[in-house]
Amino acid sequence: MISRLSHVSIFVLNQESAYEFYVDKLGFRVHTDAPMGPDARWLTVTPPDQPDLEISLMQIAPGMMFTDESAEAMKKLVQAGTFGFGVFECVDIYATYEELKAKGVEFKKPPTKEFYAIEALFRDDSGNWFSLGQKE
Amino acid sequence: MDTEDYPRAYIYRQVVRAKLFIDERFAEDIDLAGIAGEAYYSRHHFLRLFKSMFGTTPQQYRGRVRIERAKRLLAAGWGVTEACFEVGFESPSTFSSTFRRVVGVAPSRYARDAALRDESIAREPLVHVPGCFSAKLAVAQKSNSE
Image 1 (cartoon, chains in turn green, orange):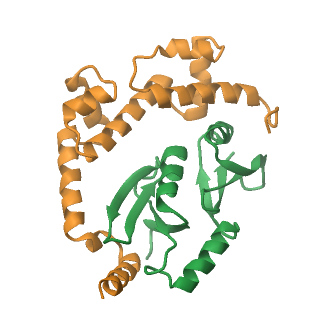
Image 2: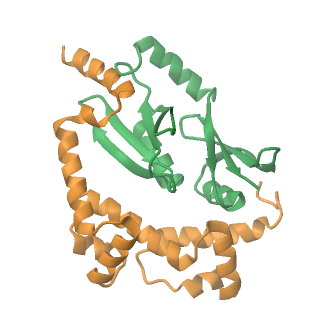
């Protein structure tokens, strides 16, 4: 019986820039940051209150999970904002919204009451979309 | 979006500004009552607002930022005493007891565990990566070395 999710991937255009976004802007903690040979880096971060969920920031590059062709295709899709990856929760969505805006995070939608939560929408530095949610 | 796009937006911006001030100046002996003044609130009102927005008091929040920063320094190879002063603690014993209470282990133990983990990763990186990712990494490394 499966009980929990421990690792999940987000595909990013540049790991260095993703590090700044997820750690310095979103405030995530670095779990593992290790070179895996000359061309790969295993970089995982965790949400501050969820230290056992590792989010792997996987660089879209030929050689690892991608061929030259599939890497190019994936980059275009991510940049175009094709993917929504999940919902991050927070204590107070208005405070979090203001803080992230002050740090330069791009929002597509300000906090808005929806059926399931108060929700805002933002994108990471690669183009991946996330909901920011606060349950009422 | 710079105007009142939701109720009390101005208040949120003021308190968030104070929180970002703590993020930036956490290692300094800043007067937290002074921050309330900068946000144009009485100390009591400011504390109430801060706690409702961030789930903790400014004092506790600054302590948390200091410990998180210390964890990063210790993992990067800093000594316990150097990390202690760098993040704003005045006494190594207070630092150690606070660190142990928050993190669950002493700072020296945390630093040692981090160093051992780094050594292990350097020696055998793939054993630290779950198979659904590491199989791909292994294939990539093999093809790169050919």
